[in-house]
Amino acid sequence: MQVPDGMLDELERLLEQTTPTYLVSRAPGRIEVLGNHVDYNGGIVLAATINRFVWSVGVQTEELVVHSMNMNETRRIQRENISPVTGPEWHSYAEGIYWAFKRRNHDVLNTTSVISGDVPIGSGLSSSAAFEVSLANLVARLSGINLNPRAMAMIAFEAERLYCQVSCGVMDQFTSQVGKPDSLLGIFCANLQVRHIPWPNDVGLVISDSGVSRSAVESLNERRNECQAALRQLTEGGFEINNLSEIGQQELSDVNDLLSERLFKRVRHVVDENMRVVQGMTALREGNSKEFGRLMFESHESSKNLYEVSHENLDLLVNMARGLPGVLGSRLTGAGLGGSTITMVKARHLAEFVKEIGSEYERESGNQPSVYATQIPGGIVVEECGKK
Image (cartoon, rainbow, N blue to C red):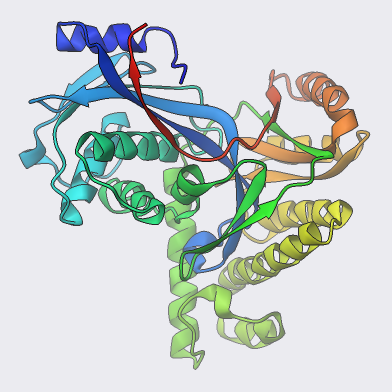
Protein backbone atom coordinates (compact mmCIF):
# COMPACT_ATOMS: atom_id res chain seq x y z
CA MET A 1 0.00 0.00 0.00
CA GLN A 2 1.32 3.41 -0.92
CA VAL A 3 1.43 5.91 1.95
CA PRO A 4 1.83 9.69 1.84
CA ASP A 5 5.35 11.04 1.49
CA GLY A 6 7.21 11.59 4.72
CA MET A 7 5.25 9.24 6.96
CA LEU A 8 7.91 6.55 7.20
CA ASP A 9 10.66 9.14 7.64
CA GLU A 10 8.68 10.65 10.51
CA LEU A 11 8.19 7.23 12.09
CA GLU A 12 11.91 6.54 11.99
CA ARG A 13 12.62 9.99 13.45
CA LEU A 14 10.36 9.17 16.40
CA LEU A 15 11.96 5.74 16.82
CA GLU A 16 15.47 7.20 16.41
CA GLN A 17 16.29 4.24 14.20
CA THR A 18 15.34 2.65 10.90
CA THR A 19 12.58 0.06 10.82
CA PRO A 20 12.67 -2.75 8.25
CA THR A 21 8.98 -3.60 8.65
CA TYR A 22 5.95 -1.61 9.75
CA LEU A 23 2.18 -1.81 9.65
CA VAL A 24 -0.02 0.45 7.52
CA SER A 25 -3.74 0.99 8.12
CA ARG A 26 -5.84 3.03 5.68
CA ALA A 27 -9.42 4.07 6.45
CA PRO A 28 -11.68 6.06 4.11
CA GLY A 29 -13.85 9.05 4.79
CA ARG A 30 -17.54 8.67 4.09
CA ILE A 31 -20.52 10.39 2.57
CA GLU A 32 -24.02 10.10 3.94
CA VAL A 33 -26.15 9.55 0.82
CA LEU A 34 -29.54 9.35 2.57
CA GLY A 35 -30.54 9.33 6.22
CA ASN A 36 -29.63 12.71 7.70
CA HIS A 37 -29.51 12.69 11.52
CA VAL A 38 -31.45 9.43 11.83
CA ASP A 39 -28.59 7.20 12.99
CA TYR A 40 -28.74 8.31 16.64
CA ASN A 41 -32.53 8.09 16.44
CA GLY A 42 -32.49 4.36 15.69
CA GLY A 43 -33.21 4.72 11.99
CA ILE A 44 -31.67 3.44 8.75
CA VAL A 45 -28.92 5.25 6.90
CA LEU A 46 -27.32 4.85 3.49
CA ALA A 47 -23.67 5.79 3.30
CA ALA A 48 -20.65 5.19 1.09
CA THR A 49 -16.88 5.31 1.43
CA ILE A 50 -14.94 7.89 -0.57
CA ASN A 51 -11.46 7.90 -2.06
CA ARG A 52 -10.10 10.24 0.61
CA PHE A 53 -8.30 8.48 3.45
CA VAL A 54 -6.52 8.58 6.79
CA TRP A 55 -3.36 6.48 7.01
CA SER A 56 -1.71 5.20 10.19
CA VAL A 57 1.84 3.81 10.06
CA GLY A 58 3.26 2.22 13.19
CA VAL A 59 5.17 -0.38 15.16
CA GLN A 60 4.92 -1.83 18.65
CA THR A 61 7.02 0.13 21.20
CA GLU A 62 7.43 0.56 24.95
CA GLU A 63 6.02 4.10 24.93
CA LEU A 64 2.67 5.20 23.52
CA VAL A 65 3.48 7.90 20.96
CA VAL A 66 1.22 9.41 18.29
CA HIS A 67 2.30 11.96 15.69
CA SER A 68 -0.07 13.87 13.40
CA MET A 69 1.44 14.91 10.09
CA ASN A 70 -1.51 17.24 9.45
CA MET A 71 -1.11 19.01 12.80
CA ASN A 72 2.69 18.67 12.89
CA GLU A 73 2.45 17.62 16.51
CA THR A 74 3.63 14.66 18.61
CA ARG A 75 1.89 13.43 21.75
CA ARG A 76 3.30 11.02 24.30
CA ILE A 77 0.30 9.52 26.03
CA GLN A 78 0.26 8.21 29.60
CA ARG A 79 -2.44 5.54 29.54
CA GLU A 80 -3.09 5.70 33.29
CA ASN A 81 -4.13 9.35 32.89
CA ILE A 82 -6.66 8.80 30.08
CA SER A 83 -10.21 9.89 30.93
CA PRO A 84 -13.15 11.21 28.85
CA VAL A 85 -12.94 14.80 27.64
CA THR A 86 -15.14 17.54 26.24
CA GLY A 87 -14.05 19.83 23.43
CA PRO A 88 -11.72 17.19 21.97
CA GLU A 89 -8.44 17.96 20.24
CA TRP A 90 -6.94 15.70 17.57
CA HIS A 91 -5.02 13.59 20.09
CA SER A 92 -8.19 12.99 22.12
CA TYR A 93 -9.40 10.66 19.38
CA ALA A 94 -6.18 8.64 19.72
CA GLU A 95 -6.52 8.51 23.50
CA GLY A 96 -10.13 7.45 23.05
CA ILE A 97 -9.10 4.40 21.04
CA TYR A 98 -6.98 3.09 23.90
CA TRP A 99 -9.72 3.97 26.40
CA ALA A 100 -12.33 2.09 24.34
CA PHE A 101 -10.16 -1.02 24.06
CA LYS A 102 -9.69 -1.00 27.84
CA ARG A 103 -13.42 -0.44 28.38
CA ARG A 104 -14.08 -3.64 26.42
CA ASN A 105 -11.39 -5.54 28.35
CA HIS A 106 -8.88 -5.81 25.51
CA ASP A 107 -5.26 -5.53 26.64
CA VAL A 108 -3.61 -3.70 23.75
CA LEU A 109 0.07 -2.87 23.50
CA ASN A 110 1.75 0.50 23.21
CA THR A 111 2.63 1.69 19.73
CA THR A 112 4.45 4.50 18.03
CA SER A 113 2.37 5.68 15.10
CA VAL A 114 2.30 8.42 12.51
CA ILE A 115 -1.07 9.55 11.15
CA SER A 116 -1.78 11.51 7.99
CA GLY A 117 -4.93 12.09 5.97
CA ASP A 118 -6.47 13.88 3.03
CA VAL A 119 -10.08 13.77 4.30
CA PRO A 120 -10.88 17.48 4.69
CA ILE A 121 -11.52 18.49 8.30
CA GLY A 122 -14.87 20.14 8.99
CA SER A 123 -16.31 19.26 5.59
CA GLY A 124 -18.93 16.73 6.65
CA LEU A 125 -16.89 13.79 5.33
CA SER A 126 -16.05 12.30 8.74
CA SER A 127 -12.31 12.80 9.04
CA SER A 128 -12.59 11.92 12.74
CA ALA A 129 -14.12 8.49 12.09
CA ALA A 130 -11.47 7.72 9.45
CA PHE A 131 -8.81 8.67 12.02
CA GLU A 132 -10.37 6.44 14.67
CA VAL A 133 -10.92 3.43 12.41
CA SER A 134 -7.42 3.69 10.96
CA LEU A 135 -5.70 3.87 14.35
CA ALA A 136 -7.95 1.29 16.03
CA ASN A 137 -7.15 -1.31 13.38
CA LEU A 138 -3.43 -0.54 13.57
CA VAL A 139 -3.39 -0.92 17.35
CA ALA A 140 -5.43 -4.14 17.26
CA ARG A 141 -3.25 -5.79 14.62
CA LEU A 142 0.00 -4.79 16.38
CA SER A 143 -1.44 -6.16 19.64
CA GLY A 144 -2.45 -9.49 18.09
CA ILE A 145 -6.13 -8.84 18.72
CA ASN A 146 -8.55 -10.17 16.10
CA LEU A 147 -12.01 -8.63 16.41
CA ASN A 148 -14.86 -8.91 13.93
CA PRO A 149 -15.45 -5.80 11.78
CA ARG A 150 -18.50 -4.61 13.71
CA ALA A 151 -16.67 -4.88 17.02
CA MET A 152 -13.83 -2.83 15.55
CA ALA A 153 -16.30 -0.21 14.37
CA MET A 154 -17.76 -0.02 17.89
CA ILE A 155 -14.30 0.58 19.38
CA ALA A 156 -13.90 3.55 17.04
CA PHE A 157 -17.46 4.73 17.73
CA GLU A 158 -17.01 4.63 21.50
CA ALA A 159 -13.78 6.60 21.22
CA GLU A 160 -15.77 9.46 19.71
CA ARG A 161 -19.18 9.10 21.35
CA LEU A 162 -18.16 8.16 24.90
CA TYR A 163 -14.59 9.38 25.27
CA CYS A 164 -14.70 12.58 23.19
CA GLN A 165 -18.41 13.06 24.05
CA VAL A 166 -19.50 13.92 20.53
CA SER A 167 -23.17 13.05 20.03
CA CYS A 168 -22.64 11.10 16.82
CA GLY A 169 -24.30 7.90 15.65
CA VAL A 170 -22.63 4.72 14.42
CA MET A 171 -22.82 5.50 10.69
CA ASP A 172 -19.40 7.09 10.26
CA GLN A 173 -17.28 4.40 11.89
CA PHE A 174 -19.32 1.52 10.48
CA THR A 175 -19.03 2.84 6.93
CA SER A 176 -15.28 3.36 7.18
CA GLN A 177 -14.80 -0.11 8.66
CA VAL A 178 -17.18 -2.37 6.73
CA GLY A 179 -18.11 -0.53 3.52
CA LYS A 180 -17.68 -2.50 0.29
CA PRO A 181 -16.44 -1.21 -3.08
CA ASP A 182 -19.08 0.18 -5.47
CA SER A 183 -21.86 -0.28 -2.91
CA LEU A 184 -23.84 1.80 -0.48
CA LEU A 185 -23.89 0.58 3.09
CA GLY A 186 -27.33 0.37 4.64
CA ILE A 187 -27.05 0.44 8.43
CA PHE A 188 -30.04 -0.44 10.60
CA CYS A 189 -28.89 1.59 13.58
CA ALA A 190 -31.33 0.10 16.11
CA ASN A 191 -29.75 -3.38 15.82
CA LEU A 192 -26.52 -2.68 13.87
CA GLN A 193 -27.47 -4.97 10.99
CA VAL A 194 -26.02 -3.93 7.63
CA ARG A 195 -26.92 -4.36 3.95
CA HIS A 196 -24.68 -3.77 0.95
CA ILE A 197 -26.57 -2.25 -1.97
CA PRO A 198 -24.81 -2.02 -5.35
CA TRP A 199 -24.45 1.47 -6.78
CA PRO A 200 -25.40 1.85 -10.49
CA ASN A 201 -22.33 1.99 -12.72
CA ASP A 202 -23.81 4.62 -15.04
CA VAL A 203 -24.15 7.18 -12.25
CA GLY A 204 -21.43 9.02 -10.35
CA LEU A 205 -21.23 10.89 -7.06
CA VAL A 206 -19.69 14.34 -6.78
CA ILE A 207 -18.61 16.00 -3.53
CA SER A 208 -18.80 19.80 -3.44
CA ASP A 209 -17.08 21.28 -0.40
CA SER A 210 -18.69 24.65 0.29
CA GLY A 211 -15.60 25.98 2.03
CA VAL A 212 -17.76 26.77 5.08
CA SER A 213 -16.07 24.87 7.88
CA ARG A 214 -17.85 24.10 11.12
CA SER A 215 -17.49 21.98 14.19
CA ALA A 216 -20.25 19.39 14.23
CA VAL A 217 -20.04 18.88 17.99
CA GLU A 218 -22.35 21.69 19.10
CA SER A 219 -25.02 21.08 16.46
CA LEU A 220 -25.00 17.31 17.00
CA ASN A 221 -25.37 17.70 20.74
CA GLU A 222 -28.19 20.25 20.40
CA ARG A 223 -30.21 18.19 17.92
CA ARG A 224 -29.66 14.99 19.87
CA ASN A 225 -30.89 16.68 23.05
CA GLU A 226 -34.00 17.89 21.21
CA CYS A 227 -34.72 14.37 19.95
CA GLN A 228 -34.25 12.90 23.41
CA ALA A 229 -36.63 15.50 24.82
CA ALA A 230 -39.21 14.63 22.15
CA LEU A 231 -38.85 10.90 22.83
CA ARG A 232 -39.29 11.45 26.55
CA GLN A 233 -42.42 13.56 26.07
CA LEU A 234 -43.91 11.04 23.64
CA THR A 235 -43.34 8.06 25.92
CA GLU A 236 -44.84 10.02 28.81
CA GLY A 237 -47.80 10.73 26.51
CA GLY A 238 -48.44 7.05 25.83
CA PHE A 239 -46.22 6.14 22.85
CA GLU A 240 -44.58 2.74 23.37
CA ILE A 241 -41.38 3.39 21.42
CA ASN A 242 -37.64 3.01 22.02
CA ASN A 243 -36.57 5.59 19.46
CA LEU A 244 -38.11 8.17 17.14
CA SER A 245 -37.64 6.03 14.03
CA GLU A 246 -40.25 3.59 15.31
CA ILE A 247 -42.95 6.21 14.74
CA GLY A 248 -45.03 5.65 11.60
CA GLN A 249 -45.95 8.47 9.26
CA GLN A 250 -49.62 7.80 10.01
CA GLU A 251 -48.95 8.64 13.68
CA LEU A 252 -47.53 12.12 13.04
CA SER A 253 -50.84 13.86 13.73
CA ASP A 254 -50.89 12.33 17.23
CA VAL A 255 -47.24 13.34 17.70
CA ASN A 256 -48.12 16.91 16.74
CA ASP A 257 -50.66 17.07 19.55
CA LEU A 258 -48.02 16.27 22.20
CA LEU A 259 -45.00 18.33 21.13
CA SER A 260 -44.01 21.93 20.64
CA GLU A 261 -43.69 23.13 17.05
CA ARG A 262 -39.88 22.93 17.20
CA LEU A 263 -39.76 19.38 18.54
CA PHE A 264 -42.46 18.23 16.13
CA LYS A 265 -40.39 19.50 13.20
CA ARG A 266 -37.43 17.43 14.41
CA VAL A 267 -39.55 14.30 14.79
CA ARG A 268 -41.25 14.74 11.43
CA HIS A 269 -37.87 15.00 9.73
CA VAL A 270 -36.64 11.80 11.40
CA VAL A 271 -39.78 9.84 10.52
CA ASP A 272 -39.94 11.04 6.91
CA GLU A 273 -36.19 10.69 6.38
CA ASN A 274 -36.26 7.12 7.64
CA MET A 275 -38.98 6.32 5.11
CA ARG A 276 -36.93 7.98 2.36
CA VAL A 277 -34.07 5.59 3.11
CA VAL A 278 -36.41 2.59 2.81
CA GLN A 279 -37.75 3.94 -0.49
CA GLY A 280 -34.22 4.70 -1.67
CA MET A 281 -33.03 1.14 -1.11
CA THR A 282 -36.00 -0.13 -3.11
CA ALA A 283 -35.30 2.36 -5.90
CA LEU A 284 -31.68 1.22 -6.21
CA ARG A 285 -32.63 -2.45 -6.22
CA GLU A 286 -35.13 -1.72 -9.01
CA GLY A 287 -32.61 0.32 -11.01
CA ASN A 288 -34.62 3.52 -10.59
CA SER A 289 -31.88 6.13 -10.30
CA LYS A 290 -34.28 8.97 -11.09
CA GLU A 291 -36.43 8.14 -8.06
CA PHE A 292 -33.37 7.88 -5.83
CA GLY A 293 -32.25 11.34 -6.96
CA ARG A 294 -35.69 12.77 -6.21
CA LEU A 295 -35.42 11.43 -2.68
CA MET A 296 -32.03 13.14 -2.29
CA PHE A 297 -33.52 16.52 -3.20
CA GLU A 298 -36.43 15.90 -0.83
CA SER A 299 -34.02 14.94 1.94
CA HIS A 300 -32.15 18.22 1.59
CA GLU A 301 -35.33 20.25 1.87
CA SER A 302 -36.31 18.37 5.03
CA SER A 303 -32.86 18.84 6.57
CA LYS A 304 -33.12 22.54 5.74
CA ASN A 305 -36.69 23.29 6.80
CA LEU A 306 -37.50 20.74 9.50
CA TYR A 307 -34.20 19.75 11.09
CA GLU A 308 -32.67 23.16 10.36
CA VAL A 309 -29.09 22.01 9.80
CA SER A 310 -28.42 23.42 6.36
CA HIS A 311 -26.53 26.59 5.45
CA GLU A 312 -27.15 29.17 2.74
CA ASN A 313 -24.02 28.02 0.90
CA LEU A 314 -25.20 24.40 0.95
CA ASP A 315 -28.59 25.52 -0.34
CA LEU A 316 -26.83 27.47 -3.09
CA LEU A 317 -24.89 24.40 -4.19
CA VAL A 318 -28.00 22.21 -4.24
CA ASN A 319 -30.03 24.78 -6.17
CA MET A 320 -27.23 25.20 -8.71
CA ALA A 321 -27.01 21.45 -9.16
CA ARG A 322 -30.72 21.26 -10.03
CA GLY A 323 -30.17 23.22 -13.22
CA LEU A 324 -27.12 21.39 -14.56
CA PRO A 325 -27.20 18.58 -17.16
CA GLY A 326 -27.21 15.01 -15.93
CA VAL A 327 -28.06 15.80 -12.30
CA LEU A 328 -30.49 13.37 -10.66
CA GLY A 329 -30.28 14.50 -7.04
CA SER A 330 -28.30 16.60 -4.56
CA ARG A 331 -28.27 17.19 -0.81
CA LEU A 332 -26.12 18.15 2.12
CA THR A 333 -24.08 15.33 3.60
CA GLY A 334 -23.20 14.87 7.25
CA ALA A 335 -24.12 17.05 10.20
CA GLY A 336 -24.70 20.15 8.08
CA LEU A 337 -24.36 23.84 9.03
CA GLY A 338 -21.51 23.97 6.53
CA GLY A 339 -19.36 21.31 4.95
CA SER A 340 -20.27 19.57 1.72
CA THR A 341 -23.03 18.49 -0.61
CA ILE A 342 -23.21 15.21 -2.50
CA THR A 343 -24.69 15.13 -5.99
CA MET A 344 -25.85 12.19 -8.09
CA VAL A 345 -24.84 12.77 -11.73
CA LYS A 346 -25.10 10.64 -14.85
CA ALA A 347 -21.63 9.35 -15.64
CA ARG A 348 -21.37 10.99 -19.05
CA HIS A 349 -21.94 14.43 -17.49
CA LEU A 350 -19.50 14.12 -14.57
CA ALA A 351 -16.63 16.17 -15.97
CA GLU A 352 -18.98 18.89 -17.18
CA PHE A 353 -20.75 19.04 -13.82
CA VAL A 354 -17.51 19.32 -11.81
CA LYS A 355 -16.36 22.22 -13.98
CA GLU A 356 -19.69 24.06 -14.05
CA ILE A 357 -20.64 23.77 -10.37
CA GLY A 358 -17.20 24.96 -9.30
CA SER A 359 -17.13 28.06 -11.49
CA GLU A 360 -20.76 28.96 -10.82
CA TYR A 361 -20.43 28.60 -7.06
CA GLU A 362 -17.28 30.72 -6.98
CA ARG A 363 -18.99 33.39 -9.04
CA GLU A 364 -22.06 33.50 -6.77
CA SER A 365 -20.48 33.03 -3.34
CA GLY A 366 -16.96 34.36 -3.70
CA ASN A 367 -15.65 31.08 -2.28
CA GLN A 368 -13.60 28.67 -4.35
CA PRO A 369 -15.02 25.21 -3.66
CA SER A 370 -13.28 21.87 -3.75
CA VAL A 371 -15.30 19.76 -6.19
CA TYR A 372 -14.43 16.20 -7.17
CA ALA A 373 -16.08 13.01 -8.32
CA THR A 374 -15.53 10.17 -5.88
CA GLN A 375 -15.32 6.46 -6.30
CA ILE A 376 -16.61 4.06 -3.63
CA PRO A 377 -13.41 2.23 -2.66
CA GLY A 378 -14.61 0.13 0.27
CA GLY A 379 -13.53 0.12 3.90
CA ILE A 380 -10.42 -0.40 6.00
CA VAL A 381 -7.26 -1.94 4.56
CA VAL A 382 -4.39 -3.11 6.81
CA GLU A 383 -1.05 -4.37 5.46
CA GLU A 384 2.37 -5.25 6.77
CA CYS A 385 5.00 -3.50 4.70
CA GLY A 386 8.77 -3.47 4.42
CA LYS A 387 11.18 -0.78 3.35
CA LYS A 388 12.07 -0.87 -0.30
